[in-house]
Structures are given as structure tokens and as C-alpha cells.
Length: 621
View 1 (tube, rainbow, N blue to C red):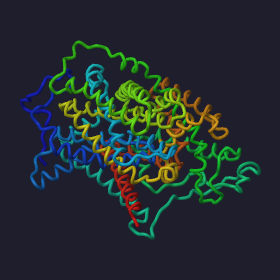
View 2 (view 1 turned 90 degrees about the horizontal axis):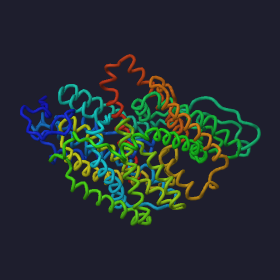
View 3 (view 1 turned 45 degrees about the vertical axis):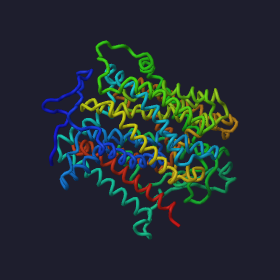
View 4 (view 1 turned 90 degrees about the vertical axis):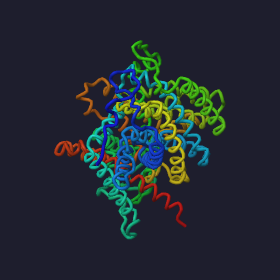
């Protein structure tokens, strides 16, 4: 297999970069080619469906940069060998992954949280065209902020942006050793194929008589002779009633392998506390409803209306408390230090007039769409965008330091603010926060991509253009996928099939500010206060504990998430986390090389298949 080291030409004709840590910009090898941008847009459009699907299932999205880089490498290297097409260069691949990752992260622009939450609360839903315009407008704000922050974050402050480093190292490795690259691609494709076929099988799409549902865990629990259970005619309940079962799906097992044992164990702990201890107690008190007396009945939809409140409170307080520990980053982001050693912009940086024009366009587009689509007052929309600029800066800095973008926390800050300045207005509360969360996600995504590009000699100007094309593709594909998968959010979401935990959290906060505390279920306020306090304390302990101790401290955010997801998801994630630990102990070399790509392939394979099944079900006569 023919490969070249594209970032190390013999006599590079490159502009001098402003920091010796990075190689000079490569001006010889092709970067922003038609095939590079189209490949990124197509791969990103497909991966955007995976993230929308996963987001509505588990509330999370995945960074698809490495997946996109491996897929494009496999495609174009195969075409090169078969038909003699031009070599797929490293810098073309970088443009591809930049466009694809920005398209894939479009789910964070509202499609898996505030947009369905607004529909569930008000019945209002945008058609495909306007929905695409909305998520594009949200994303553009984040891109503009990232363009302005690149030099400060990457060159002056030298923030690591770990996902960007991982992508850069992956790209350099696959071009240094073609056999290793193809081995990883085989695991990626193999995992996706197995997961997709198994998804079809358990849904009865291969053999109609063969279907595999949730596998029941034996055992029952007796209930008191008085209270809510007796009124509902329930004498005992099963593990399955409280959502504990074995899920045959591979998706959450793979997710557990990606996030690790700590997150999986924390979620399982949250599920046990929430569903086995708190939920039956709340039903007994008459505060929550059960979902039927049958042993096979799943109580998720009925009981989550109470249990979500302590779960949301713990997630929000833990997130905001952890975020508060980053106050130095906040100050540094809002009052950046000057570095006179940094050179002026080169021809490869985004021109200043482009940036100024981008700020103006992003402001006008974001305000116009808020006012025109959701009837939000212009002054409120302007405040939302201005606040977004500030919080996106902070989120990008935190992401650069930790690799985690606090999208949820950013959105909750805006929801709290607009609950005060525009009380009772669900659209303002949700969609202004949508701008903040989505912009923060795109801002961080581009800066991780910029880190990758800086490490391999790419042009930041061309990467910024690639991300604009990426969010165009993601907006169109992701919006279409969401509308096809979830034609009726009120009936389909917050169910065992589509738990939509992010929707649960955003909707719950919006309801508080729409109707006030009196609208909450009995006992929920006290449960929120207790869970919220635990979230604060747990986050403080986690931040102050020595690093070698932190891995043993349960994550309060993950515990809260366990309250809001069916327990069979948490159980699968825990199994995936255990598999990760075992692999690292007994096959560390293999795990380091292939485990992440295999898990990513499983997530992508099942997600794409799930999207296909959903579309086929909708279109079937």
C-alpha cells in the first residue's frame, strides 16, 4: 500500500507558524479538495444520524473525528489500489474529519434535547427546512467564536485539547503504517457489521419468528399492606417492573467500553438507588404512579415523572459545582493575557475581516431565527446570543483542559437566566438555552479539530471553511433523521424505547419556570433539595480529592443520569466497563490498539441500523 508522510515534505514551502511546538503549514500537499469536503460531508451526514439516535437513547453524542478519518482512509486507499485514484493525503483526511465531526455533532444543536422538549410542552414543531436552518444558525455562532479563540487557546495558552491530540496521532499513525490502519478499520467495520446484523436479528428483521426482548431477572419484592401499592392493586413487584433486566442490544455495552467502569458503575448505583429504593417508596407514599400490576409491566413512563426530579437536580448541581471550580479558566477566557511573542496572523489564519463579518452574520442569523421561528422578543434574543458568546468561550476553555464540553451545564445556566428575565415563556427558556449549548459544542469541536490540524501542518482557514460545510450537511441530514425517527415526540419519547434523558432534563427545568414549583409532583421538591445537595458535596469531594483517589469516587452526574434512564441501560454500560477493565488487564496491547475503534464501530453500526429500522417502520404500509 502506497503511503506518504504528507506533513514532512523534503522542502516545505510553508508559512512560518506562530509557535515552534507546531510544524509549519504545509503548502505543497492538497488540503481543501472537492473530494475531501464531499467525503467529510457524506460521512458526517451519516454519523449525524448515529449521534441523533444515540442522543435520544442515552443523552450522549460521540466525537466522530477518528471514526471519520479511518473510514475515509479505508475508502480512498481501496479506490487507489483498485482504480488508481490519486492518493488520499493526510491533509485531505484532516479536512474530511473536520467536516465530518462538525456534521456529526449537530445533535448537540438541539435535536436531542430542547427541540423535542419544546414540542412536548407546547406541541410546536418545525418542518425539515426551518429546523435545518435553526440548527445551522446555532452551530454558526459556535464556529465564529472558535475562529476568534484559536490563537489564544492553542498558541498562547497552549491548552491540550485531548481529543484533537488523539485524532492527530491516529492520522499520523495510519499514514506511517498502512497495515496498522487497515487493521483498525477492519475492527471498526467488523464491529459495525456484527452490531447491525444483531440489531436486525433481535428485532425479527432477519427471521420473523426470532425476536429477543429484554431478558427478565428472576425475583420479586413484597410491598407494604397500606399506601399507593395497595390502592393500585399491587401486592408485589418484579425487577422488570423497576426497569432492571438484561438488554440484548450491544449499543450500551459498547458505550460502557468507551466511557469506562467508573461511569458505568456510577450509573448502575444511581439506577439501584433510584429505581429499586426511591421509586417504590415514592409509589408507596402516593407521590408517584406505578405502571401496572403485571410482572412484565415496565413502570418507566409512569414513574419517571417523579424520579426525574432528584436525578435532574443531582446532575445540574454536580455539573455547575464542577464548572464553578473552573473560575480561573473563566477569568482567563474573558480577560486573555497578551503574548507579545506571538506573531501576527499569517495568510493561513482566518482573515480578521472574515471574523468580523462572521460575528455580524452569526448575530443576525441567531436573532432572526429566534424571533421569527419561536416568537422570542428581539431584545431577549440579542441577550441570548451575547450570553452565548461568553459561555461558549468558557465551555471551549474547559473542553480544552479536560476534553469534556459542558454543553448541559451551559444550557442550564441560560435556562436559569431566562427563567428570571422571561418567566413562563417555554420557547425563550428552551431555545435561548439551545443557542448556548449548541454553540458551545461546535466551538469546542472546531478547536479540537484545529489542534489536530496544527499538529500536522494544516491551514486553520481551510479547516474553518470545512466546518461550515460540515454543519450544512449535518443540519440537513440530522434534522431529517430526527423528524423521521420521532414523528410524535409526546408519545414516543420518555419511554423504554426512547428514554431521551437529555429531553427529560431540559423539559423538567423548563416546566419549573413555566408553571412554578406548585406544578411539581408531591415530595419532588424535597427530593430535589436532598439530591441537589448530594450533587454539590460529591462534586466538591471529587475536585478536592487526590487524583489517584478520584477514580474510586462515584460520579454524581452519572448517578443522577442513572435515575433518569431505564436500569437495563446502566446494567449494560456496567458490563461494558467491566469488559474494558478485563481487556486492559489481560490483553492490554490489543485493547490499546483496537478496543476503542471496535466499540465505536458497534455504536455506529447499531445506530445506523436503528435509524434504518425506524425509517422502514414509518414508511411501511
